[in-house]
Figure 1 (cartoon, rainbow, N blue to C red):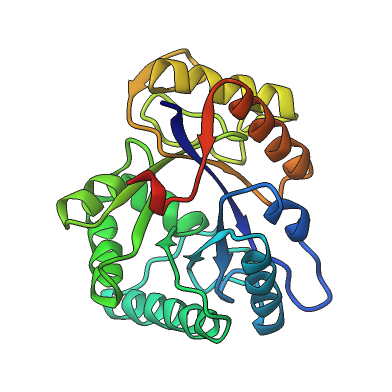
Figure 2 (figure 1 turned 90 degrees about the vertical axis):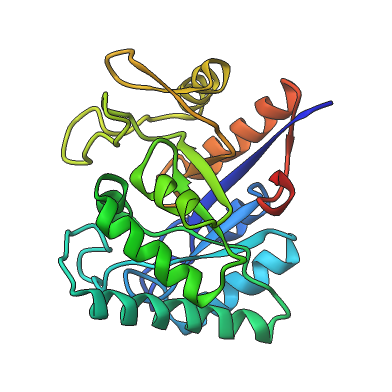
Length: 256
């Protein structure tokens, strides 16, 4: 019996005349797309086109909500009141869900973006707030959360289905948090190096930090950031080699 694994990417992150990534190419490779909801990137036309392309390629669609931070691409820390956070997340989830329905697409999952995600990985209070909001919106949605994170724990404690992910193109610290993008060794560059990074973690069933520390975890999904210049080549190389090594690439829904 083949081991199942999911390949996901953050997509729909263009805005107006500004283009980010190669979404049509990525959608021909990945199993799941995390769509920007307009607060860090994406606009109505970009969202609509990405939904249509995802449907064409039978790719599962999830929401990728963020802090309201277009100028900073959602990568700047913000400290919202619980009411502000609830309003911002519900607005984004509702907008994407509504547009998805016009294309006969049912949302499968939610994956917070950028600083919102990073902060929730280390802050149980924020993680629990996010999880509570998602659960109140639609408890059937899968939470796509970084492995070994507070967000994962909060989701599981709240009874959500939680898919844990690792990053093909990001390095890890000893506490299982991502190396900050401001540091030189934060990114893994190139398809082959990214695959080697992933392969080691899959074989060890653990996150492996830059120091070599192993933090045991379940791995359901692998993320390739769509804004990475190597994204298409990396995703294609990962898919090819994972399948070659006996993995079945599948949707998040089929992981459970």
